[in-house]
Length: 209
Image 1 (cartoon, helix red, strand yellow):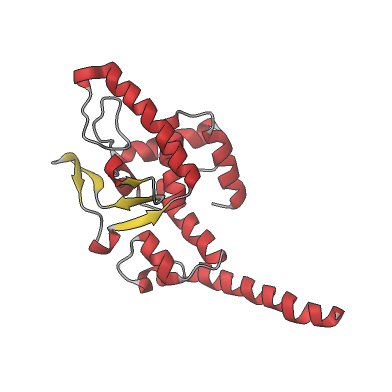
Image 2 (tube, helix red, strand yellow):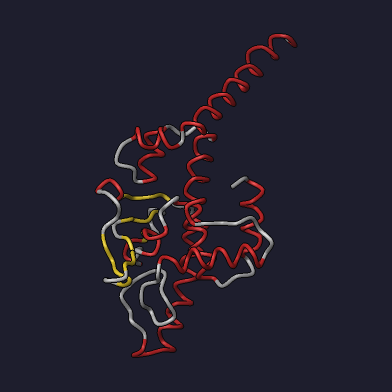
C-alpha cells in the first residue's frame, strides 16, 4: 500500500463502525497478524505506557472451530508501542462495547477480548479478511487484505530509517534474518533513497557553497 492508499483508507474508515475503525487502525499501526489482533484482551492494552502486549492468537480449523492459541513463535510474544491516538480510539470503543454488553446481559460472553462478535465471542479470523474486501469495494479502494498492513508498516519504518533489529522485534520474527530476507527489496530501495539524500547534502550544497 502507498501513502495515498493509507490516506484514502483512513478517510473511508471514519464512516465505518468504531469497532472496525479501531481494528483496522491496530493492524496498520502494529503490523500484527490478524489472529494476533483478534487475540488481544483488554488486559493486554497498557494505556499508561501506550503499548499492547501480543501474547495469544485466534485461529480456526474445521475440527476445533474458532479457538485461542499462542502466537506463531515464542518471539511473536511481544510488546508493541502504539500512539496516543490509538489509545484514545480504543477507549472510545471500550465504552461502546460495555454498552453492548449491558444491553445483551446474560447473552453476552464476556471473555475479555478487545474485538468480538456481537455476543462477545471471539471473531473468526476470516471475518476480518471478508470485511476488508467488502470495505474496499464499498469505497472504491484497491483490494486490501490484513497482511498488506503488516508489509506496509515494515516498509514505512525502513524508509523512515528504523533498523532491521527494531523492525524484526515489532513484527515478532524469530530471527532478524527473516525480516531482512522478506524485505530485502525494501531495504535496497531505502538505501538508494539514503544515497540520494546524502548526495543532496554533500554535493549540491558544495556546488552552491
